[in-house]
Length: 104
Image 1 (cartoon, rainbow, N blue to C red):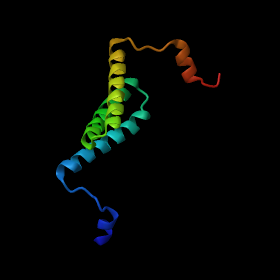
Image 2: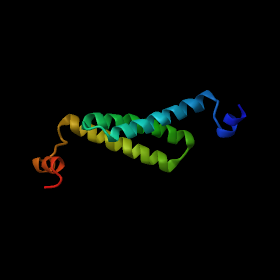
Image 3: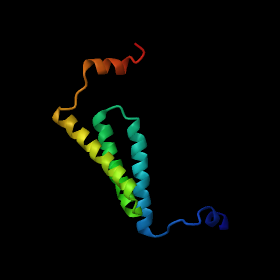
């Protein structure tokens, strides 16, 4: 049993700390998952939720730079999602062809 206490000496046992760390882990997992999504709407939604999770964590640890980065990332994903919903976000045929055939 002493092995585990030596392995995790600062393991938080307080419920709120565990909850905040779980929210942060969800944010990290969502960001990684969002990178692999093809559908832009779904990707932006995943980035928004993951960004909010990591923004909450950044506020909890009182890191201004991390909070600013996550806030900016979340707002950028939200703006792109709104552009997709309103039809403002479009790709030209040339961009689609370059994406589908990068070696041409």
